[in-house]
Length: 461
Image (cartoon, rainbow, N blue to C red; front, side):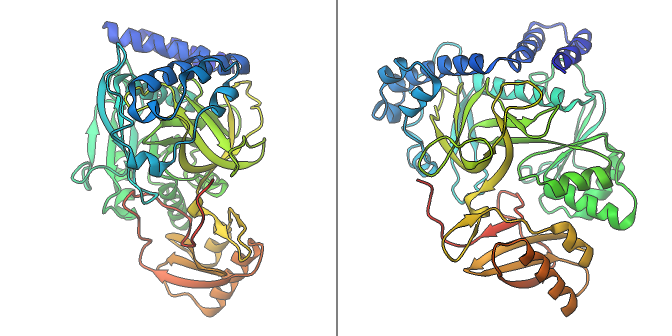
């Protein structure tokens, strides 16, 4: 287990292109194969050193931080937690309102401006984060690591079904490339990749395209995996002989993992990322749960009082990318919630996350003001009424609307049975209102959310 990544790399070594850049990229991946086995003390020492460098730069070269932080206080810190406690939390609204002030006036040697990464706007607040060549190099390295952790055979075909810019990778042909990613990611030849945009593309069209491409691997959103699996369940045939699925962009639950294995015969490997911070965590290759990519960023899970959450608890995700000097995001609150995992059985000391929970708007609000993460037993509902898609919405105190994309009308008896199942998973009875719709509307981001609350919720402290 400890040598798996290194051995995979050694098998790939003969295929590395002869140019210097390719060998540099390959050697950096070998170093990452070592850093994933750092001890906990080594991880925190590494992060503290890079945090001190980033803070010293920010206090001198970034107008926003120059007014708010003391580099001296961080330099005196003996522990990572002590250093973090000396920094304020950066809220998303503050980022939006101070984009110019958060840009570095000049960059360190070797760092160059490399454009912007724009958030999907799934929170209703779009932000554009300046990035650098070093940050992008880290994202390429983590994309390479993800395929190694997932155990992918890079010589096979991969299909990517996700949102693209308007006019790109559109049905019926999509877009094809002779490689999974450019040489800046994989420094050796790979199999071909095929891309299809989800914009204005139906499940039937995605299915037909996958049948034509016949890939070994699929990279897409969990909601598309669920829809494909449910179609297999009803029709009895698969669209492609998949060996593995990589999911991005949405919350993965146990239901969709089980559906992928049962009906698509392909396990899910999930990657947690954001436009602002890049790759944040990825599924452990050996055990349940996720590992924070601690050699690229610091992740904290905090309660509403700003204190670190204990193992098993759920809190706000706060991240500090360590290598984006173009726009340093120190203790940036993403708006996501995650569950802190126990130390992983695999032996990696990278911090563990048990689950990625979603946004505050994905929490159900009770009449007394308490909130929690709901579960609606979608697989049990599917047995009562075959659904292409579904979504639950809290529209008022004590009221949940169940939006169901179905082919046929629902009987009163089916409605009653569904209400019973939904309420069985809630801490108190709700008025459940069934709505049959042709399809579930997607937000601008294209991301699917099983539950959305329209209730006014106070922002985290």
